[in-house]
Amino acid sequence: MRLSARKLASDRTPDRSVRSWFYTATMIPSSSPNPTNATGVGEMETTLIRPTFVWTPNDTTDVTLIWEEGKSEGDGAAWTSVSLQRAGALPEFTTVLNDIGFTEIDWRQITFETNIDMGRGTLTNILGYREVLANSATDVDGTQIPIFFVPGRTDQNQISNELRWSGLVSDTWETTFGLYLFEQDIHYRESRFVQGGLLQRALGGDMNAKNLGLIWNNDFHLNDTVTLTAGVRYTDEKKSAQIITGVNGVGCSDVISFNCTFDNLSGDWSNVTPKLGIQWAYNDDSQVYAYYLKGCRSH
Image (tube, rainbow, N blue to C red; front, side, top):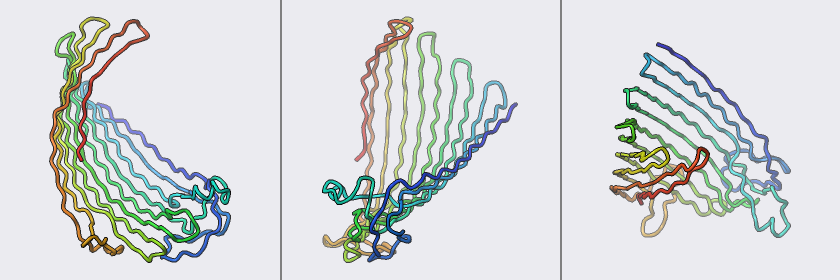
């Protein structure tokens, strides 16, 4: 039995690389203080820690746990006016946005992997979890006039599990079959302030997505140089969502509490997709191959 561990810690702060000029007082509640003229924007600091633990209880089993937690903080996205740059009124890599905005992202994820050697094959299970909370505010118009300002918030979490067996059925037949499960929840809210807040609109929604996949892939080695591949995948996906909408064609203006009308949407999709291929290694250093694949994507 053996237990090993490793830790990664990182703290990265790039310098501001975009120049910003002509800051003016904003006409809507500002997300952050406006810097003085001729200052830099685009600063972002990212900190993360990622410890890894590997446990080997015997010669046929290994268990790996990877945990990561991180945070990014900094200015909002740096937008600029291409029209002003093309007209020569604004130098390149320069913006005249009136609000610097902000970015805050926190995330946490865990991966738990188990491998068991079963002689002619390996049984693998991978369990994963991830959650992300992102808040931001952006001066989208990129001018010194408060034309279009957008704060937003995303709260997301997901969990997945993959169980597969891969190995030899015979000396010339390799196969992999497995089961994949995935579930995700997303909550998104966005406030739009147009013309200094004269027009305000609330956007966003909530969505739950569930996915199930069954896979079976085979490699048939006809000889030392030619391999045929044949596989199939079955996918079943379900989605349900509540999307902010307006009443009688008028959008929601509650940009604080988002007490809005929501449309309820849902869908269920299933499909079977094939995979066919051939590979020819015509010498020790080169090969040619061709594959036919089909994929489906839900709407």
